[in-house]
Length: 264
Image (cartoon, rainbow, N blue to C red; front, side, top):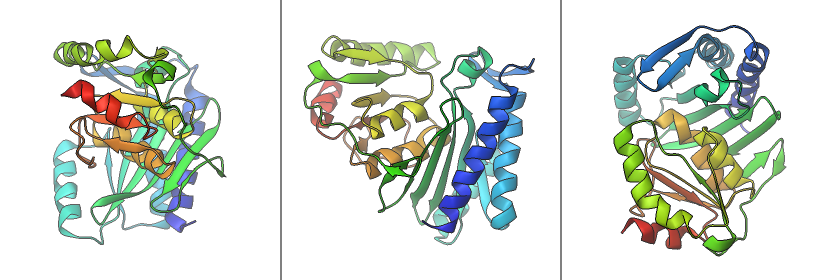
């Protein structure tokens, strides 16, 4: 296990400890958009992650959901121009609305982007104390033990994860594409945390997840974890995902071709 993966795991747990401690506290809630909120816990967890990483790797950089968009553009450009830059892609609290309503489906997501790819991913659920992690080419683990995707081969037997998105336009598109598919699956689940849902696919608890409106920090870590657990992640076109993809299909691999047909 690399030093950076160990630090990512340590940072994820540090952030998760803060989230758990603040869960039942009175909190300040701010609106970034009509249906997009941020809490004081987001910022506290974000600081904990950066402090943990920078204590060991002071030259590393960050793009975070709670960061500055112009700074993000500059850092992405630098990362594209240099294979040496270590860029951490961070969502200190994925599932903020759940957290604000004390719904127990949220997590911390941390990925390391370097040399044009996500190299490391760590996703921590502070409620269950489950730490999902992966390093490119070295498999995926849950609390240190190897995990793998399910063997489900038919939609009729599938536990299917879906998120509808915030914008009404995206909800309509998601419904148009997904409702015909959802009529076939055994059961559908919406967690309100894409990173957690992807990790449940990686662990074989769910068989697929589709989300059509994501940012890099939402899914960079979890997409790698799914792939390293033996699953498949692409865009709905079947094109390989990148850290800048907006639309994702994550499956156990066996269901992938069937699901992609619904997007044609």
